[in-house]
Length: 483
Length: 95
Image (cartoon, rainbow over all chains, first blue to last red):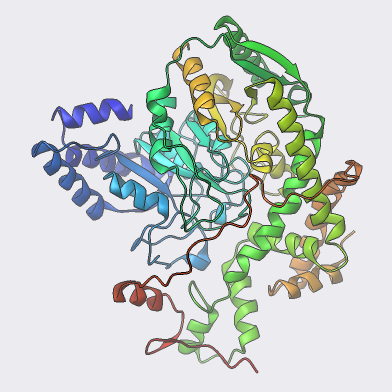
């Protein structure tokens, strides 16, 4: 897909300006219903597109991503463009700097169409927690696109951009990719710099691509990966062009682990299970070796996640205090003449401008970290995190890839889970483990199931070894090409 | 499990103003979630070290060097202050 567009650009069959205009036209047509974008960036995007056209006309070599229109999740900072994280508290926030991934993409002459919707501060599983709008699933607009990168996946699925950036803390790239029928990759923790990504849970967050094909995911990953001194958790990685390493059609040596527990989960839709079993059979036919494995500690994954994540959230959200940036009741007091103390400014600003789920997680984390409860919750969860990681290390001595469903169901209805936060959390059951352990994971479309007369996409999840995106992408590519 | 009073105490620690009604709601919702995470107590973690860093990074350091930002960037930072006086962020007295 990206390569096709690139070839059209360099063969001068189409200009980037024309291509960008076409995408904006499609956004104008579709987005009033889909609501994938929070803001558009027309002028800058077209300027960039024209500069790429000029380079091509002058015979300069341009990158695969040059002149290709993309979307960016609105928790990733682009200098000079409002970046809200879908929160009222950042409604007018204009970042004074670019996220590292954005600097890297600017060097490649990417065209940024606009910023895509998400659950507020990337907390949720459906984009219904956005303070501004609920994105619709392009396959059935009565259903959610998933979340939290639901704006990015809906935009890609509706062809309102060629590809998009998302972020993934517990499945936020993969689950909506499964719901929208896109490819979504969460790289290994430390593979991509988090500098300029608005922090949710810092030991889990990772930026990654949402694309139409596996090759596109590889193209984007190669261009955003790498160590960054501005993110001390980013790791030195081999400089690879992943897109050139695909196509190893012979996967006869590949060992794919299938954890039995993944098929015993309550709430796994039997039709999803059937599609995953078909995918397993497909891999068998392609010559891969299927190995039955057991990951018994997986049953603690969600509980571990929902202790550590809120704890990190409560700490990260402390910066939203109405003092240095963002909305503040202090600024209004200027107009209204209200006489607020410093304490009032903290309490009222956070109360008014932060959403329900954000406050819920801040309080949960505050509780888990508070005196008398730290050992019981946070410390215990960090120990269980060690146990889960150890189990994965053992599993990866036997297998190269772990395969299972991305989500237990296809896209659920808008409003179906909003009244029950715990039920919403269960949508993450298969995806959180990759963030708990740090391994790379991808959701690849593996079929559709019929709901209300519509074919709703289902994704399978592949998890790889730490920093072995090459094997992960290749296994995904071989599957994609065979279907 | 988590009483309304405990919820109010947590909200105070987190600097979030909540109404009586919200305290009620949070009490139910947070208790549900805490009930769910109780599951962790079943996990055997005897002799297990808690995770410090997931990919094992240790003592990551960089050169201690001042990086000068442009006046334009500085202005952009200042422009984000909710209340300002000249180039200063204006806040209420702490005491």
